[in-house]
Image (cartoon, rainbow, N blue to C red; front, side, top):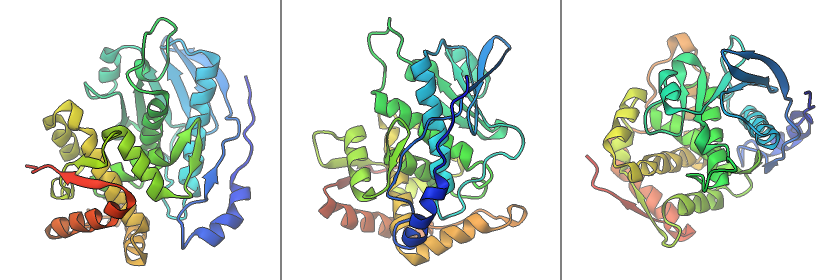
Length: 315
């Protein structure tokens, strides 16, 4: 089955020229229909190609679910590619893979971490998703996440895949924060809205953490700033399950500050992204000694915008 994609980037280029310095992304990206071409089954799994990705699954995907997934995946790649900063650097060899698993056992065998719903496995250039979080079976009484959050999970992991060659050497709070930034801008079904990111961030965090209270519980900045990838996973594992999103929320606020906090921060990020891979060293965008001051600046920024940041004592 072939479905064409409506080209987006030529339409966006004039807008990018005018907004690159003031607003890092176009106001809105509206998806066209994703390319979706069925491939021969492999190892008992159904396989499809989209414009950018391979999707394979041992979950029975209904046509509408599959089309929507392909649309979300392709438009996420388009959004990352459209960013004026050089974020888009997917794997160079082959077609990046999104694997949907019906069973947690096969999910973990491919590299997924027990207790997660989705994961980017860097060493395999692979996104894994547990089907129960993504596909609504007619027999299922209720999905674990709301439809919007299911798609935001996919957006988050696909951003990691789209940044595959730029992730190395970046602080993990930034890697996670940028992925959450795009998930935050995702309005559903592959539509992205970047016109008012302060509002998007506020609503995203209120929905996920505190729908009935302006107080937003967070882990402290000092806990996250020094972490690398393995350290991030260990940190999450030590948190109670219902508090783990607080780490992603804090990374989102730090990434938002890096993107919207002035020319010096943008230039520092651009320098980190553009440094040759062979010469790249671990980047320090926030000095650990400045963690407390950074946290205070976030509190001052977000309080008049309707968020009261509340930090745990940390480790």
